Image 1 (cartoon, rainbow, N blue to C red):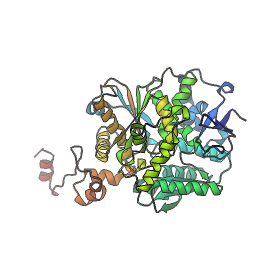
Image 2: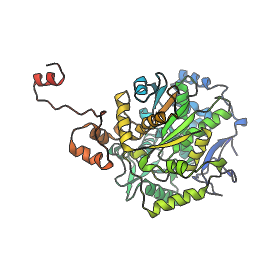
Image 3: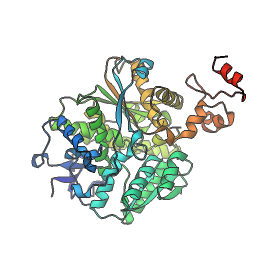
Image 4: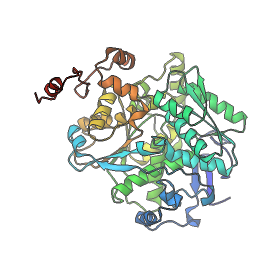
Length: 462
């Protein structure tokens, strides 16, 4: 077996599998898999600062990539196998104006903006790694289920590389047009399933299990290897100092799972001296993790979590036909596939879980945009969650906090326009059914006559 391999996360199994096997679950017990490394046989940087030397070699596509310049910390492919399109050119922005709004001290709030990725979301961090593994195993067709960002990312990697035929499964009426347009534009075969994301994921997993199609959802452990690098770039942006908190939207829980693994490995390798705390923020209309952790006392428990709690919860969900419902379509997921890995991340990072309602999400999204970065609705959950945790006293004003903004604002422009506009039809279509209304953060357009004096008057200059 090579220095990289796949391993079952269940402590009573821990079965290992060859790197070149296409698996999304343990063949012996059905648990999720990790990509693991024999670090004793691999070169490990002495310091995270060692990665800075790669900035001087940015004509090399691998060193230009914000994922693969950290390839020593995800050393599963040969350099010649890596599929990259320049992902990870993201920034960590200190935002004192927003900090003031949420009760943080100046210099303590940072926004990790993943909307600058080629497809406009954080998914490219994981998709470059999944596409690389797909190339390693000789896959000819890739597939995913998606609320939008995954399909856009998978499609762009298939389109740019020319290596794969790409198929995406989306739920009917459960995808923002900004995201759907990307999958269509990049040439993916798009199947719109009559159901929600959970239905789409169940179907794509069935199809991929029965046919030679490479599944690229975050149940794929190689996806999460790429998503670890979001945290490497946060550390890089902070001069390799560890923040006190990472705040991230929930959804399918791939990011939070990847972040936990990243910090666990960095600590084990002696590259950081402490691990930050983690706050996972759900939408209230898709609050499975929140409910299970805070109300049902579901815990990682060294990998021996109570599976009966999860089974009973999902059975109740089915009996009541309870579906996820939130304007933040990227996290509109009731059955997160990385639930158990997220429990592990919460233990590693001494984490907390909260839920915020749609009104809080869209207000926070507008507030983020007004202070520097337009982002998709799901990203608004981070600031809404941060504000809630500040009010609870869980996060202190002096804590250093990095909030992950997962995607660009043009992922869902219809919601943005509906929030700000005075057009009652647009508001009714996108906002009112969810109980969301205009707020002080709305920036409605001003209608004026085609006349200079009227314009000056509207500007307060006449």
